Figure 1 (cartoon, rainbow, N blue to C red):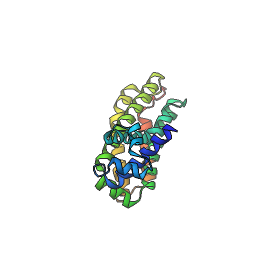
Figure 2: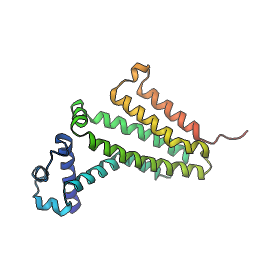
Figure 3: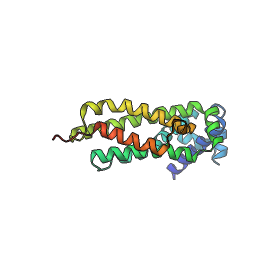
Length: 199
């Protein structure tokens, strides 16, 4: 019951932060919108900053959960890396499909700092997961160590560009589709780090 109440408070806070902005959202707003008293909120959180940090943590974890599931799986390194890349593309697709234009505008104007904090934390978690997966592939002799060490930075730059272009829906100006990019990136990155059999 306690965890459900805490999650409910975080859901309400997230919605209020997104629609009103963090600065304009008060503890009273969260209490009223969640049908809980202020005393209940203070049972779980010391102040609005603590609620804000919990929302950031939860949202960043939600973004990387699919990636974490892949990394924790028993797949072989090459298949695991392919599934990881597929999941990363799916995250962007799902986010864009779930967002309306008005939500995106609201996020960019009212809540940019919160979204940037979530993105930054998610990227840090994502980098940790990539490193773990690549280290495992190197250890099993599936990944080229030199290439694998270069990959996290290259990966990050590729996906920052992809995310930006996908959000702006401007792949067509490059005569590309999202599907084209997806296939090319996955094949390129996998072929870059896989240890090639010696003849």
